[in-house]
Length: 500
Image (cartoon, rainbow, N blue to C red; front, side, top):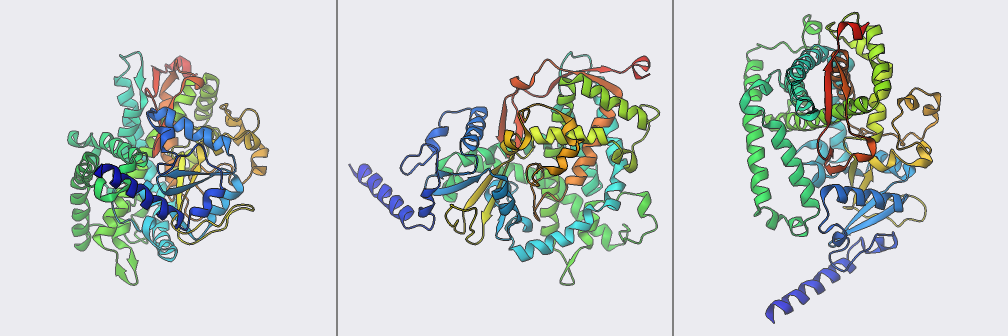
C-alpha cells in the first residue's frame, strides 16, 4: 500500500512538473504513439538495435518536416526538412548536445562552451587542419595504408573477411601518428583500443533508451558507468604519458614547431605539437585542455574513418563495374601498384572522391546529429517557439535518402550523381555528412584524405567481391552507423596481367 501511494505521488509530481515546464506547449508538434510519464519509450521496448534504428528512420519518413519524441518528461524535437536543418545548424544558439557526444566524459570546450568561447576554440584549432598541415600527413597515411594491404594479403587464406578490424587498426595508426607522433597502435597491449572505443559508444547509445539512466545519481551507480570509467582510465593510460613526454620535450626545445621552420615541409606537423604551442589571452592552454582535444581527435577520427572506409570498400565489392572505374583512374595516375601517394595525386582522384561522397550519402557515419538550444529559437512557420535546453535531433541517414531531394533512385548507389552538374543545383543542406554550418566537422578534409589513401592502396592491390547485397544490409546506431554481421568481403590479389 505504501509503495502504491509513493508511486501515485511520483506520477503526480512528474505530471505537474511537465505541465509547468517551458516545453509543455511543444505538444502541438506531432508525435508517434506516446504514453503518460514514459512518453515514446514504450515504442522501443524489446526492439533490437537494428529495429530501433529502423523505427526511428520510419518516424522521420512519417513526419518529414518536424515531430517530437517524449522521453519521460523530456522533449526531443526531430527535424527533417532541409530548410529547418539549415536554420538549426547555422544558428548561434544551438550547440552540440553534450549528452550524445561527450562520450569520453571530458570538459571539451567545443561541446560545453558558450558560442563566443566556441568561436575562440575553433579559431585556435583551424590552423591545425589547414592544407599545408594536412599535406604533411600524406606520408603517414601512405605508410599505414601499405601496412593494411600487407595485413589483408596475409589474411587471404580465408575465403571471406570482415574489413572493419583491418581498417580500424589502420586508422588508429594514422590518428595516433598524426596527433601524437607515436605509433601506439603497434603495441599489442593497445590493439584493444578499437574494441573498447566501440564498447564505449554502445554504452552511450544504450543509455538514451534507459529511463532510469537519465538520472545521473542512478547512472553513476550502474555497471555501465563503472565500465565506462574503466574504459576512460584505459584510454588515459595510453595517451597521457605521450602528451606529458611531448610537453617536457617542448620545454627543452627538442621539437621544432615554429611555422617558419625550414624543416616543416620534410616532416608532418603533428597535432599535439601544435596544441602545445597554442595560446589564449597570451597564456598557453592547459594540459587538461590539450588532453581533451587529443581524446576527441582520436575518438572521433579513428572510429569514423574506419567505418566509412569499410563502407566504401563494401560498396566497391558490391559494384564491380564501379570498382573497375576506380582502378582505371588509379592506373592513369600511378605508374605502378607500389608508387607512393602524395597530396596532389590524392586530390586528382575525382572519381574515387565521387564514390566516397556517394557512400557518405547513403551511409553517413554519424547518422544522427544532436543540437541543444542555448536560448529560445523560432523555427519554421507554424511551429511553436522552442525553449532553451531542448535537444533537436537531425537524421542525416533519412535526409540523404529523401526522394524529393535525390529522386526516385535515392536508395541506389550511383557515384555519377556527384559528377553531374545537377549536384550544384541541390539544396545546400541536402548532403551534409560532416554536419553543416559553423560547427561542422573540423576534420572533414583529414577524413577524406585518409579514406582516399586506404581505398587507393586496397584497390590497386586487390579485387574485392562480396555475397552481400544492398537490401540485405541491417544497420544500427551506436553514435556511429554500424553494420550487423560485419563488412564481409573476399579479397583476391591483382596479378600483373589483370593490371594491364
